[in-house]
Length: 191
Ligand code: AMP
Image 1 (cartoon, rainbow, N blue to C red):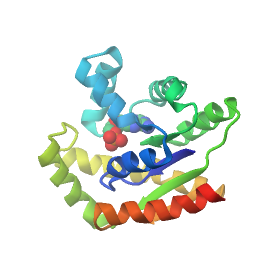
Image 2: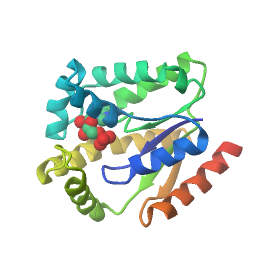
Image 3: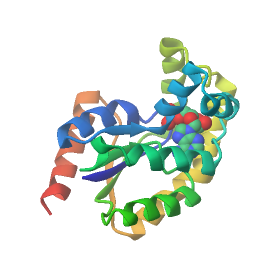
Image 4: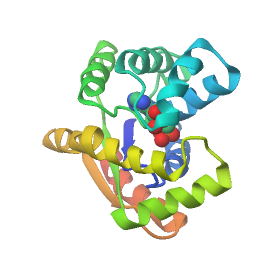
């Protein structure tokens, strides 16, 4: 299975991505996690990414695309993957299409977690308190939501036009959301 998980910041993508990836036996690849690991290790990639992340802006496409290209070429992703947080721009969609096509595969589904917009800010502020992420101050959170609406939300229509979107209600208990996701994706996997 080659899957994407999409939804606004605070929709619970990371939590659900891990469960879905385990269910299908593929790695969950989170560009945000890879950037954070690089920031933590002080690599050149991390140093470059940090200034964008801290401001709630997107890391430039070229940097992000190259990182994803090499990650999905690793052997554990040979049978498939679940991408969390990528693609986020139209340019990244085009690049991902090329990467997948080069391997002779196709994308199976784009899981979209739908959430109540009003709940997002509260969820993100709570997560900021718990995890202490440097990009989780209120101003930066607001900017991340804005950038998502401008740059990433339009991608849902692109994938919808291809018939790939599986929309799941992301509100409520984590376990309930997970069950809804499995039910929806198992139908895709059988088709
Ligand atoms: P996330 O954990 O997915 O919310 O990502 C945290 C931050 O990493 C984002 O706010 C961006 O600064 C950066 N980032 C993650 N994925 C991407 C991407 N696909 N394109 C550009 N920047 C990204």
